[in-house]
Image 1 (cartoon, rainbow over the protein chains, first blue to last red):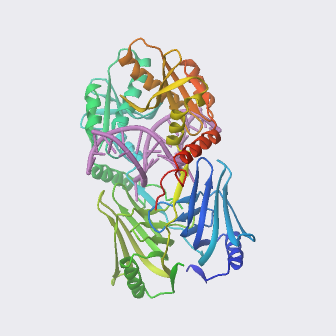
Image 2: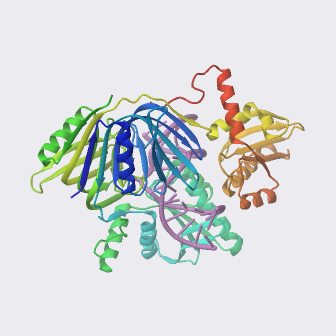
Image 3: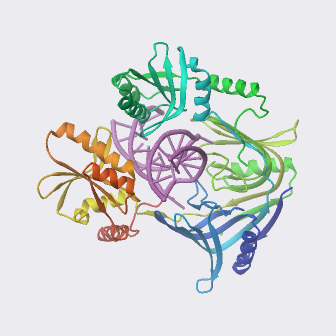
Length: 264
Length: 264
DNA sequence: GTCTACATGTCGCTC
DNA sequence: GAGCGACGTGTAGAC
């Protein structure tokens, strides 16, 4: 069971000690603070004073959340070094979260600190994500008939000059078939990507006919326009069907959790 | 001053009431919970049981954070509808966060709930981001001499077939000059982008000479290689100088806060 | 470190 | 609302 400490209506100097201790002992820290925030690094920003929620995680991840919006207004990833001090002049708690590479700094100046929560959380549950582009690619590679014709898979993630071809196959007539997979609606950039691969291949293969297929659940009209113009093809795929195949495959292999490795 | 309520070691049925009340009255809610999580939508995921931090914001933004990592393991943006209920069978608190479009659902099943914090936060401080690519572009457009020669700005964000040209100018000799701006180190993709724009322009302009310039604080060696090969140019820009110009410009306009509009 | 492409990307703008 | 390009994108893999 999680160990949780609650500190309410703290004196700022006490807060410094509690924050330091929490960071040192790698606790998860949640703070409600009246503060302003500055950020310097790849860009820079300034957030004027207001009441916010601050999270400091056990690995040094640092988040400042306003009362609305799902993304933090300022943050620092898990590699950062966090320093807490007290500014006697201004009578404020200064929290600096520093990231080495790229060199970036978030500075929080706290004037009031109504609440600090420190906790130790036990969390070793596995996390599984399904229907990534990689999964679609693997299912189609093993079951190229899902593309609606008789195809033989030659290569996966084939390297060509400017990048990687998702799927490289041959059709019944011996034509090379290049497939670009998109998990969501394919847009013009997907068609451009496919076009780029085919042009790169042509340099090496001379006059041989190369077919290009976009495999995606749907395609934007602009993308379809370019596709037709370039004499490329679109093959609609059904993600539910893909997922069924992925499940079956995993079952055959006797894997308990049917997909992926959990991120812990 | 922020109004903060602390609820420790709650009975699960009590927790349901407090969560419902907090959501109804648009409070900011922070929960430490032992839970498992499922997500269905554009993708799908399953997180096995463990102790996590849950944030529900006043606008319905919903975040589940593990003890490490700066990004939430599951989330729902601010448009979502949040429902809290008690499952009598399993004796668990069920929190459903539902987003209408795209249709996505996060389901949290809570078996223990050591802590709930509800709060009302006053946060109207403005937020300013400095030195975006847009700002660099605007400063260079108004002060093209910063590019180190006598230039006249013709257009900003000029539309060409595959995208937008950051800056479109003419030099002393009447040549067209196309500038691609990068806020950070320019890489090969920036050079390819510039090349693409110039090729698109050439289709419309025939034999006229078109110069291409990458304007960035620095450039990678690979990018520079391609640049030389394509007879394009690199012009180093100094972000501090750009920022000074941006400030001055804003001052001249009599704008109090010298950059951007604050997000409230 | 750079290049490449994916992501429940998200954000903001235009049409 | 769809389409499209930018982002403190972040992230993972390859060289």
